[in-house]
Amino acid sequence: MKKILLDILICPRCLPEEIRLSDVALETSSTEILKGRLHCGNCGTDYPIEEGIAFLEPDPSLELRQKNRYETMPVVSSYLWSHFGDLMKDDEASNAYREWAILIEPHGGFCLDAGSAVGRFTFEMAQKADFAVGIDNAVAFIRTARELMLSRGGTLELAEEGRITRSQRLIFPGNWKTDNCEFIVGDALALPFSTASFASVSSLNIVDKVSKPLKHLQELNRVARPRGAQCLFSDPFSWSPEVADPADWLGGTQEGLFAGRGHENVLALLEGRLDGLHPFWHIQGMGRIQWKIRTHCNHYESIRSCFVKAAR
Image (spheres, rainbow, N blue to C red):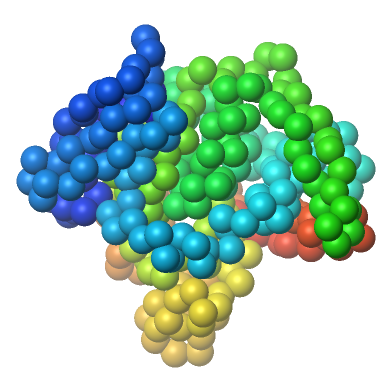
């Protein structure tokens, strides 16, 4: 974990109280803590740093992690192709991450990519901000993203059919900066960052994957600067009762505060027409972006994600 993050890290277990974490470093380099722990003097929790990865979940559970489908290698492979297929010159790949990246104006300060998965948008934002942080609760995603960061690419194993895979080399663009980004394990519902830490925040295809969608947006709103900030939200709104209680969905129901379509309700939340977020945002643009995910060489899923770009 890069030491520059120490100034903004707080204990996620103690939220909404913001308690700074102290570091106990056992192995370091000039810029990173490779092994150690982050300690909360309030609740006494120690958050480990292992192989450069900081684990900052409020309630880590090995059992839940083992049940998390995003921890499996076939899913990691699918997301690697989804994020980087265009860089590998695959004719089937989409340009979705480039399209999302264009929507963010270059800026000083930190950028947060919430639900970063294997890191493509974090890397895109590292080209536009002083420092970019990706956070995800899937350890396999974060470990993969950091390996790509350190090696500026890698050899990916892509599923072809059944147990047959093929190796595909990924090389990052030569002008990409990768020393100004970091990936940590954490919870999008309890972000381990102090209020107003980020000049830009993003939530790409995650709000329908968390148990408390409004809480996720509130956390994203909390860590964004009250002024001089950008927000990029995008989601297909594939609500599922297996992920979240329908009463907590931000759309897709016929009754309740968030009855109707999720895209319209997120707009209303950002603008302050629905109560839940403060301070509010000014909408700068909206639309749809098509992206793909690959299961194997003969199976692709095409997904349409509705985006909102906002600023304040």
